Image 1: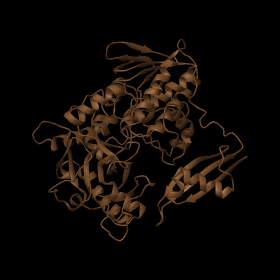
Image 2: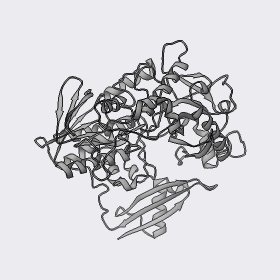
Image 3: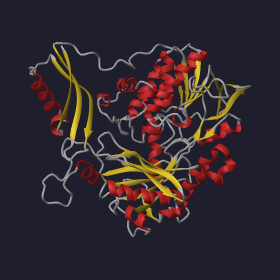
Image 4: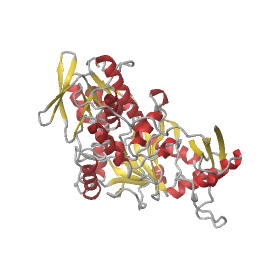
Length: 536
């Protein structure tokens, strides 16, 4: 017999698995025997009221064998001798496109400009410790893409784009925790995701696919209005039934290459700003309605044993210079770290990440401002690459401002929050998770007025929504510029094929069709499906 139920419980009842099981058995009047299985289906934390609650949907099997927890990602055919398809990029879009092609009987040939997850670790250490940026292997480029070492969030609102559960099951089949199938905001963590990514690669290889690391694409093999393949930096040509282009939002050289080769690209809306960092204990206090940290009235000065590090989401509309702009938090990382995400020397870019336990003492989030067409006018002569040039200019300016000695390090410009809003340079900065270090600057030297002023307005509004958010207990760290691709590679809405170049399938975040690991993975599968439908 199977019964489904939905419960709203206190954290200590719902998040302690033994207590939850006992509560369910008592609720249903069932014995605590091995043949009674309690399986959570979905779990979400609700802190909107004064008392934080946990909403749980669960299935209970009494005297009945539960169905398998996962059904996808367990078996793949051998495609060693099958027809090849070229995939450029080994991020989630590229890897999941490869796995789907294998399921459909084609051989993926994956080309990745960076190294595998193990080699990437050395290059990330060089950025953090020595301020040395390898343009081909960094927090953005390499096996698994940007998400591998930049958090591993799996939450997406893109339920209409594909089967989210299927993507999560494939992750679980390759080593991710089963908890991601339950949590409303699933998260693998940067300490565990590399192992999962390596397992996905091994699955591709074991099925007869190919994965080539340190293989940068520098040209396209075009014949008339269609693509036959690509050329790597060493001169090697790779051809196939089609090309799935899944290079990520930071592959600026690919956008330039497409433009030079007259492959249609378009400008796309995006946002830029900073990372904002607070103590996680402050965010916990604000979000979980805890006693203030300085209070002696309550013995519970923390979130307790069961609640995870609290997160937040903020959005507002501002008006500056007669133009309305959205200001919003982005990629919030509870219990996380800020990391250097530049892809070339002389640039300063930051991003956020969280380990699986989300147990650092800091909370950080992107805090960004929508970019308008008017902002791009000084770069209009660059055509569809205008946004890319704006990004690059601000990143390079940030690097120069934070490196007054001229050594162009990865030291980041920073300013305390209230000081920024009030127009004061911070006399000192706070302890930070950003390993390369901070330099106190007036962020108006880095941010254009059309970003700085809406950001100040937005912070005032957020300070009203979350009392204590706007204070000098937090700081702004720059620059958060890679929220999404400033370029779209246009494709047919139904077939995913490029609008003017046949057999080219723009894919994932870099092409402008995804925003995160799961949506990129779903888009990779969709491109594989459509390629096979047209040419398989």
